[in-house]
Image (cartoon, rainbow, N blue to C red; front, side):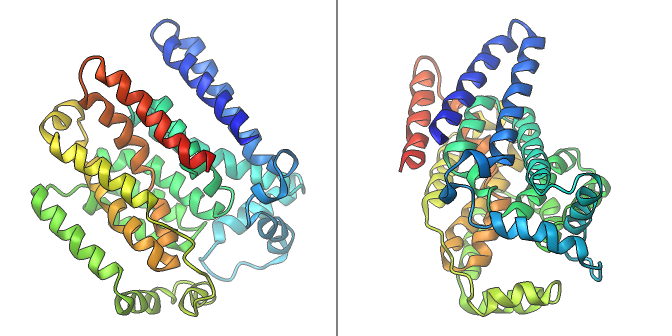
Length: 338
């Protein structure tokens, strides 16, 4: 089924790209069809996919639908998610709606982010599927909801509207407390330091993140947000379950862009924010295999690839651009097959 959804999705994306130049109404209609298709695929996955592909956390969220409805709200943590469950119980009472609504929120943020920031949106969605971002959303649903809201708030980083960005992130953090850390991304993504200074800072950040002492200090301070939740990270209850694939992809992507930085600046108005976002991804993707908390945190930075890889295609001129386009499609198909 996963191959069928990839073929259908990319076919629709290619048609949409062609129609964008000729008929904007058909273009929008096809995007709606694709959006709806992915929502159905994600929201109804229990009935579409094999048991081992619907997500390890699926049944935990299913249980939560019935348990959380009877829980009194006593803290800020997860209040948005609990209220969503209570609301769905009132209007419907069917747990499937929780997964449909969650899929809608996640895909809305991803689609809007891609359509506004990627020059090759079909490549972006293709990578979103093949690199496992869609599948990741089957598991850590609350964090992907936070990530989606952050992607919607990304426009306020570009327009330098901190008040609106702050409100959006504050709302996002009601679904997962880790969203509060995204507030700090506003000045970081907007920084204009010289590139060599940014690289130096990222190297220092990597050293800190991969230091066990720094990680324990970080966890001991953040557990006050949700003591029960973060205590499981400190105790080592969760393993890392990560590798360096995303790091290598992000690093190669970053190197290519930096080697062609003058051209990239001319082609992309918000190149500065994109590069900062990609650098942060490199740091957290490198640290992800060392501890589960960074493995979870990297989710917020992975969408950088959905913009920088497609936008990198324009760095190539002439017929070679088509070759690079095909190479990217082929390369990202490999991890999806494996």
